[in-house]
Image (cartoon, rainbow, N blue to C red; front, top):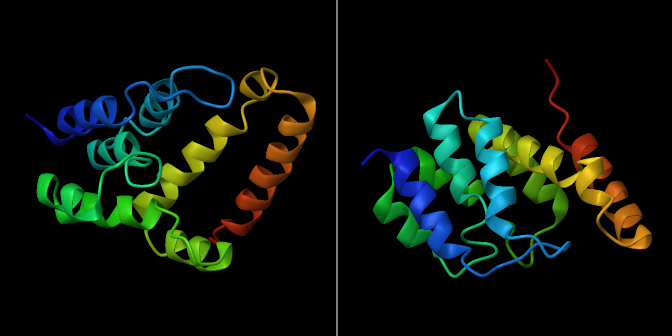
Length: 142
């Protein structure tokens, strides 16, 4: 089985029963992020796994044991760790091209106006500001 299929299956197990802020199945978000980077199998696998350590009970070791090191490192870079600043997190993402690409796809999906419209206005406004700040912090100089 290829890494994309394994990642997809793991993500479905990891996020089973979870819902997003609008009450939709969480795996729908993960699938959209994966679809946004599907031209690159490694990035697509990382996208399927991008919230498995942060929002599900998967550990770094479990990811590392089941996927190539490059995938594991990208998923680890995408995981926000308690006790670390947002600046530290964004610096890490900018240093890892695959993780950065997946994070930008993640932000784009989270900031989608149609998704935000499903939320109470105060929550949607707070999230719009959060995602705008994240996009600005992740700007990469060319």
